Structures are given as C-alpha cells and as structure tokens.
Image (cartoon, rainbow, N blue to C red):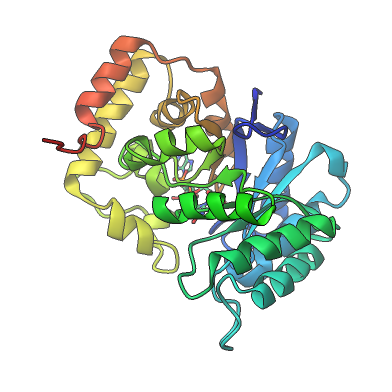
Length: 324
Ligand SMILES: NC(=O)c1ccc[n+]([C@@H]2O[C@H](COP(=O)([O-])OP(=O)(O)OC[C@H]3O[C@@H](n4cnc5c(N)ncnc54)[C@H](OP(=O)(O)O)[C@@H]3O)[C@@H](O)[C@H]2O)c1
C-alpha cells in the first residue's frame, strides 16, 4: 500500500480507502462487513470513510463495532454531517447546533473519542460560513476532531471559507471529497487547480461510477440481480448519472484496454484516478470481499502514456473555458 499526505497537511492516508455507503450496515450484514474491513486493513488500508446518514447511522454503528479492537492510532476515520437525521427543523445542515450534536452522536456510534476528519457532506447556504468554521474550530480545540473538510462545495464557497478561517484565526479546511471517475472528470477543470494553491487534499468517491466502470452492465441488457443498479433502494444515483447505452459501451472499451495491461476494468478505472497527485486517496465501494480484492490491486498498476491517451479519447476531459 502507498500512503499519501492530505494536501499540505501532516496526515497520511492509504491511497485506497474503504467506504461504507450502501454497503456496510445496509447491503452487508455484520459478518460480511467485518470481512470487508479486515481484508482492507490487512492490505494496508488505514482510511475508513463513513457518514452519519449512511443507513441512518447503521454504517457508523457497524464500523465502530468492527474497529473497536483495532489500534486507534493505525486508523484514519472520516465521517460527515449535513444530511437529514430526523424530521425536526434543526436535524440537518451545518448550524452550530446540528454539527455539535451530530459530532457527539457519531463518536458514540463509532465508539471513538475523536474523529480524524470531520466533513461537511454538502454546503448549507442557510448557515453563515463563519458559524460552521467556528464550530469546527471549537470541536478541534475540544479534541473531538483533528481536521475538517468539505464534499462537493461550489468553488466560491471553498475560497470564501478559507479566507474567513484565516481572518477568524480558525483552522482552515484540509480535505475535499469530490466525485471523480472516468465518466465524471469535472474536478480536473477547476477544483484540482484551485485547491492545489490552498493545500487541500482530495479523497475521491465513486471511482467506478457506482459499478458502471467495471463493465458488468452490458449494452442492451437490464442489470443482473444482486447489483446496485438492480435494487430500487440503491440505484437512484447510477440510474440518474450513468445509466446510458453509450456509457455501457464505453465500459466495454475500458475492459478491452484493461486486458492489454493484464488488469480488470475496475483496477484500471481506480488506477486512473490515482494518477493525479491531487488525489490523496480513492475511496473504494466494494460490496463483497471478491470485489474488494479486485479493486485493491489497482495500486500495482502504472498506466503507460499511450493507454492514457486512448482513455482520453473514449472518456474526454471536460472542455476548457472558451475565453476570447
Ligand atoms: N461525499 C459523498 O457525497 C459521497 C458520495 C458517494 C460515496 N461516497 C464515499 O465513497 C465510497 C465509494 O463510493 P461508491 O460506492 O459510489 O464507489 P464505486 O466504486 O463507484 O461503486 C461501488 C459499487 O460498485 C460495485 N463494485 C465495486 N467493485 C466492483 C468490482 N470489482 N466488480 C464488480 N462490481 C463492483 C459494487 O456494487 P454492486 O456489487 O452492489 O453492484 C459497489 O458497491 C462510498 O462507500 C462512500 O464512503 C461519498
């Protein structure tokens, strides 16, 4: 396993992390969840990614139970706040009240006394940035969190938050968690260049476009049972963002190219994310140990330049802005 710094900060994460969305605490029972975590840990994964809202707290509960006997210093735990956790007016968002309450609730569910990284799951335009920044600063001073960060915030929010944190004498955000894969290359356009200047590190999600980039969804066919795309409880995002005949065809091309390298499509898609120095870690979303073992081998793959060019042709980068 390779370990990379989070941007300019001192924390080092395994370049492959293990995620818990729609898997641990939802589609995986306790035994399967334990096997996933143990397989990842034994392969050198130190970074485990979760959120308060994943399976309404169950992902954190499962992860906490599994990790309680692992040495805490060998783990980097990231959880998130923002998504609704109840129907009350204050049960969501990034207010001081909700962040503080959910931080304590997450620590309880995880059976831990601090979080390595606490992430704002999305932006909350109803709460002033100062309020969120100062709450993160307070939690850090109380020893409840070490670093904080954001996921999928618009660039102007990121810039303003860094400026305000400096002005307030509060710690700046250290981590960004964007969606990044061959079918979704937008972070290359603005997010990566801007945040490089700010020293933020990226832990990227959905490297396989919810499974589309494994090539297992065949053109002209409906999804096989037991896949994320087949289950109405889990398929909202894949159906909305990736489910087209063109993408299924592209994934078949990816499979052929991967074969030239002696790799699987999943390994090539993950290794492709890792090629960027802005990426500190790619979060894996495996549901089975077999998938996880497949995906972990991505770390061994170095992609030659001609293959990168072929991939650019099939999965073009976002167009540059048209400045005249
Ligand atoms: N910040 C955010 O808003 C955000 C959003 C999404 C995710 N995340 C984090 O990022 C993690 C990864 O995201 P993701 O789950 O979307 O990742 P992904 O890698 O794009 O999709 C994972 C899914 O693809 C399928 N899969 C994975 N490896 C496979 C293989 N080798 N062969 C065949 N199928 C395979 C599995 O689904 P099936 O087997 O069920 O088909 C698996 O659950 C999450 O667990 C979460 O921690 C964060």
